[in-house]
Length: 410
Image 1 (cartoon, helix red, strand yellow):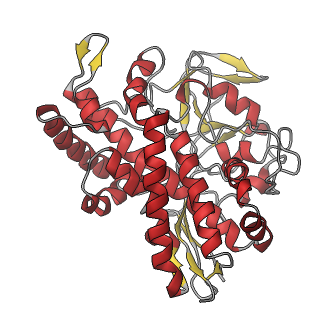
Image 2 (cartoon, one colour):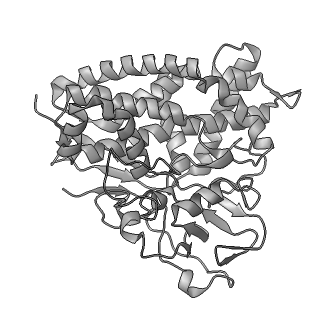
Image 3 (cartoon, helix red, strand yellow):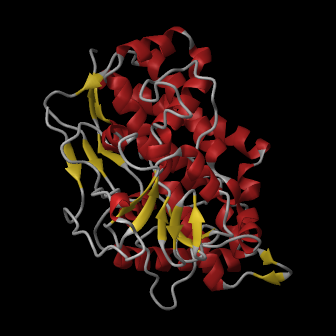
């Protein structure tokens, strides 16, 4: 079965290497388009880990540094004084004049913390308990509907329903809008395509919703954003649109993408499926191990000043990619890192970032992934990749399983 890879516009050309970058640190690796015939998205990172320098320069996507050590990734995530988010949260980000900031991800503390607090009410324990009830009921409904068929396309028939429908309820958006918003959000984390055009449509959609909620607020997350106070003043429309747009991008992609990677792995690993089915109490530990092993984001930072970072001379304005898939397979932190081990003790990971930019939705993501494991495996314990219909991967800022046909015996 041939794996299909969706790299958007195809291979990108490498650019000129700056004079301050030594030749021995330049590696011919495009993290937005890493797959060159490999069977799954994370394979190139696993293959290159230990063969590339701890810090190296990729000449693609405008040229940027990449960190291949998990501890270096955590250090850079946590240090906005040296590595700023204010110049864009991806290495190739070019903001059009007048575009809103995608707050808080395109901000540094203390301003970033002010905007981050807007998300807090949605992720406190009572709210998460309510989301867990909703997610479990929806997961059971979806799985019971799929089970008698003996097959499904997991991404569009489950992964783009469970976390995304829960998200749409949190922001009180009609479920019908899901199909309109998904391609707009996905374009922002794909390797190629009309990002600016799709972002403009997201801004317009967010602006319309923010204006509606400002005039007639409800008890949803967009209403809280639209009516927020920022340092004692009302949030501006421009600010609220930026925050809401970021919320849409994050809420519509990341968890669905992670679920795709997990199910792609489980489809080929009966040992792990049976282990989880036999001991449902492993679901929380399994969730943590899957989050470690299948980290999928490649956010960017900008170097603030000329400096030496672990022996490498960086210059102000250099771009830095925080490639979390490299950290996921770092043997210095994870013995036998390619092995999925539900008894692994280390819980340090950069899957959701680190420091001030840790993803505020990380606990909800864990809940939804745990529910997937707890409700799918008792009902459909034995499933496999469809031998006649290959998976398709989408690469870019986030690496995703775009299509995942599964089959099982009825």
